[in-house]
Length: 112
Length: 113
Image (cartoon, rainbow over all chains, first blue to last red; front, side):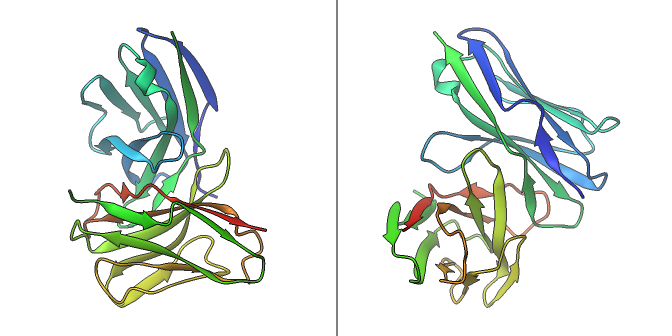
């Protein structure tokens, strides 16, 4: 079946370094992708999104890259800070659908 | 401040009892959603509603029921038929348009013993 998943469940990063979080998806009809950040005990918070007609999008300290050829999505966080410690989820939406499908999440821990 | 309010934050129930989780939004969003989150897992869709008085089952609707009588409210009832109800429940909303992100509440943690 279709699935969305992340390559690694955990990522430990030194404060100040760049983080890269990866996500693979299998649905060829996926049209829209979102990265969410979830802190402990809270709901997911929108970080950045990208549509399938783009391959890169930048926000404040974050960049999302989309490679449709290999069905791969990544989130890059520049100069990682302690406040970036959280679980990061990728989510995808199929064309014409309203239901987001979520991956299992990557837990990012920032070392001081 | 516009947002999504879920209440209560923590809820405890005895097995065999139905329980209703509240979700209210003042974002004027047409679409609302309920997700379930279990430890170490992604979010799984329970029910969603794209418009008032209409809703559809998600991937894990068994043992749950919803209503959408008002645009701003989408309560979820966890019935006694739900075999494994202890979980973190997240409500979300979005504008009714393709390619629009979901905005989430801060969840209700339900524990059934």
